[in-house]
Image 1 (cartoon, one colour):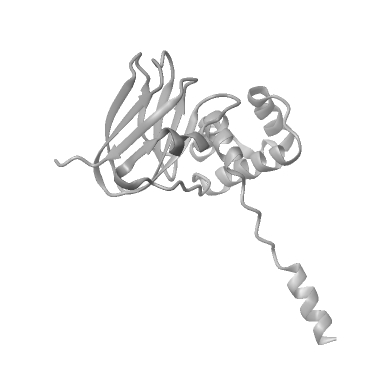
Image 2: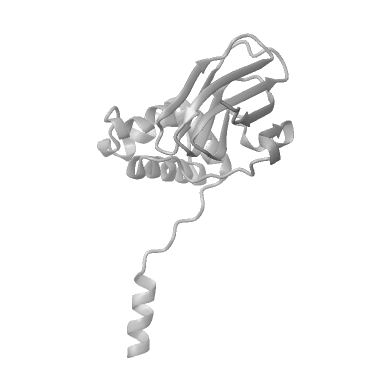
Length: 193
């Protein structure tokens, strides 16, 4: 009897959710997050229901089904409940310089754009340089902290290299880049004052 009660108790414990695939994290953050992070500021309500959320997401992503839908809704739920980015980590290259090969896994092939966890940065002034394979005729760069606070939001200029400077309080940073142009390199460093 004691064994049976122990088995029932173990089976009734909450099961940890499976890790959300990187492709879903990238797709959500390049297409959906800008609107859905608004829950934290009251712009959008998750309580409107799954059907309303599905309709809203399908307007931007097309029909979503199966594991794609499950992953996207898990990301939506995480965003709404925790008001933080889903914990995705990239290997930060030595010296803060990312190559085309480092960046490729963080590209949204379907809708375009990139979502790149930049890693934990120290408090202070930082410089981010981006290099493109061709002239980036349009796009938007956004750098946020773990709680979606915007540190940088810029429109891309028609250049092959973009540089931006910003101040961070320290902690994880995330870069969202909306462009169809291939990104071939980034460099994140902390210049001396």
